[in-house]
Each structure stands twice: as C-alpha cells, then as structure tokens.
Image (cartoon, rainbow, N blue to C red; front, side, top):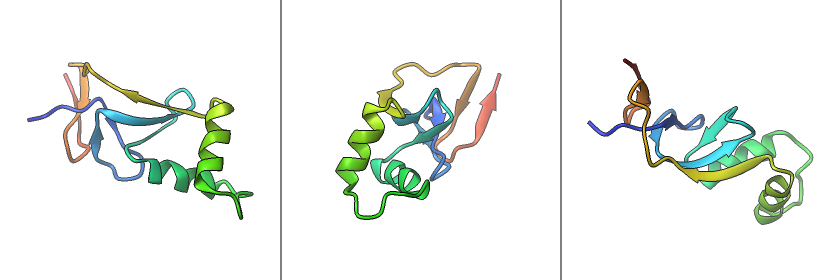
Length: 85
C-alpha cells in the first residue's frame, strides 16, 4: 500500500506533493483547489487566477512542496484514511 504524507482538504485523498496554506492549516493537491479556496474568501471578482496566485504567494499565504519522506508514525492511504503507529 502506498503511503502519503498529507491529506488534501479539497478531495480528502492522500498526497505527497501539493500546496500548503500558511503553516499547514490547509493542504491542496491541485492548484484549482487552492484557487477555489482563495476565491472563497471574497473580494476577488474580476481578478485572474494568475494574479490571485501571485498575490497570495507574494504575501506568503501558500507554497508548493513535495514530501519525499513519509512519517512512519502518522500517514494516509490513497483514500485519505489516517494511520497511526
């Protein structure tokens, strides 16, 4: 069984790469999910996705990362089920 380091807050599925909001408050596996969350906060009418992403990135609201190692004590499966040893 493949192990995943985090669970996507949009899909509920396990992920080993993606977008981290803040200090780990939220995780998104796809940029579309991040954009939807950013837009859900309001005040984004008429702004392009690229502009919204750039502004949020420049304000250190999110970053992209890949987790190369999975914590053996806490991990997720593909369906987002959490496992603790």
